[in-house]
Image (cartoon, rainbow, N blue to C red; front, side, top):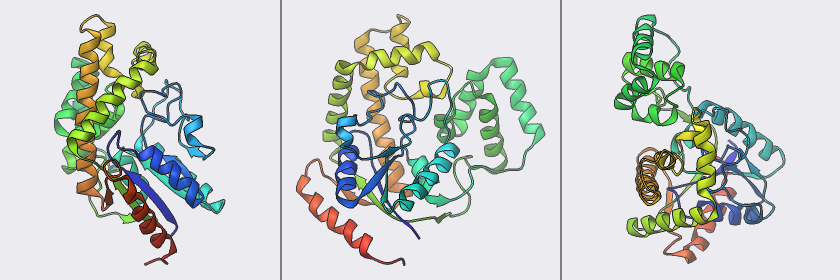
Length: 306
């Protein structure tokens, strides 16, 4: 199996800087495993590394979609695997970096996203619900039944919402969760970054304040004008919509961004700890432990398969 290095963890924990340092040392190229960094014009709220920060390291799956386009787990699975093949063909190490757990899992493991057989009766039932009460109401039903799917499907994408409800009603499983234990497609080494909860929350709050000074509001306004696409679901953007409508103050919107970002970080950690076997490190409070981490990675790179 081909080797792939993966760096995961919650927002604001130092994944980007670690990935660039390791890419320099290990002759690597980086694949973004973030569901929002694919969008052009969304640089600040998605915490994209600047050209300067990238230090000449090639990055894949960043700025590859317009705001008007959708982007799914299946898109990432396909394009991420293509990027891995390209990087390996150059004799370099693919380094996948991100906090979107489902994307990382779908990339690394061999499983199909969702059941194939269809049920006309269930589909017609939800079609009627959508036509009677609207797309938002239909999406809220999905959110109650299958929060995982609801978080990754835009409420206006009626077809996908109905498909997710159909799969859940028939199987009892999320369309995004495989029923059988999938097999890994790569010999991957998974680095998990974490830190003390209070420290992490403080870093998130500070990051939000910094993003505001860098122009986050302008990006949010850009998305507010579109408001029908998958890209409007990103935390750090949608919280400003009520502010633009005069329903809340700017301060209230900012507090909501911070709160939602902290909650998301908690969910990210739970996902990775429950679903994937990672080597966990706290480089925020113990930066010198990066030497030990690099040794672990080198040992893995030197080891043969199996």
